[in-house]
Image: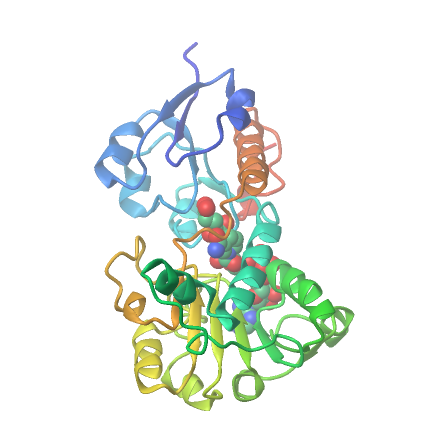
Length: 318
Ligand SMILES: NC(=O)C1=CN([C@@H]2O[C@H](COP(=O)(O)OP(=O)(O)OC[C@H]3O[C@@H](n4cnc5c(N)ncnc54)[C@H](O)[C@@H]3O)[C@@H](O)[C@H]2O)C=CC1
Ligand SMILES: O=C(O)CCC(=O)C(=O)O
């Protein structure tokens, strides 16, 4: 009997692939749609990170597919509805990388407030300019968290010892949960108007696309530092560009962009924008956890066991 084919479309640590020993493992460059489609006709499983878009065309090229496993949290790169219609399980690795994202968020807030990146670039370019890069203390600030799920909660917990006031906007969590991490639930407008720092931790969905647009940015303090380690497109990039140009907010720290790779994105022209290339989950620990969990889901699906991390549980086998 021929072995089930597992296509690995994004880089994963080699150490996590060991449980796939009973299958044929095929590597391909998932960011290249034709390479991806060519790898899929006889595939039973597809393993991805965020670099691979799994749309209807990709699903049509994979008639034998039984599971798409996402080594990470966000599944906005997968057409889950179309996969469900095609009878394909979609599983992710919730929580696997959320600590890494929370730690990066804290790093971006602190380095953003102290202008570490532009000061570093200026010094390397031969400028010793101490007054230009005077920053602000985090202590005493009001921090607004948009989304108080796994990442937002870890960020809140890590911010508490800095003596900040924490606001949160998340209609789907209880005020008791918010209070347990020292945060006070409020509406989005009030959060935007009262915060010195706003950090985004919601998934990208039709409801959250453009959640922070021109109107919300107009409500903000001119000193606002806006941080996004969730997904591009939740903040309207055109509106953010305008706000930064006009000086109606002070700066932004962005790990994610509407279109990635974000090379050439006009936001990168602002000295007040600190940018990283979607590195939230890029730690050794997070990648091992995410890879291991995604591989476990593939093994479960291909051996007809229940897949607890499936997002479309109505399709769970077993
Ligand atoms: N930069 C990176 O490498 C990474 C980014 N992420 C992103 O971070 C996002 C958040 O991750 P988690 O905290 O694990 O997700 P989560 O599902 O635990 O939390 C998301 C929170 O957003 C809230 N929410 C949903 N829709 C909302 C809306 N319309 N308005 C306000 N709140 C809303 C939910 O109630 C929930 O509490 C992921 O969806 C993913 O896109 C996750 C991992 C790595
Ligand atoms: O795969 C990656 O590194 C991206 C992680 C991410 O954005 C997620 O897990 O939602």
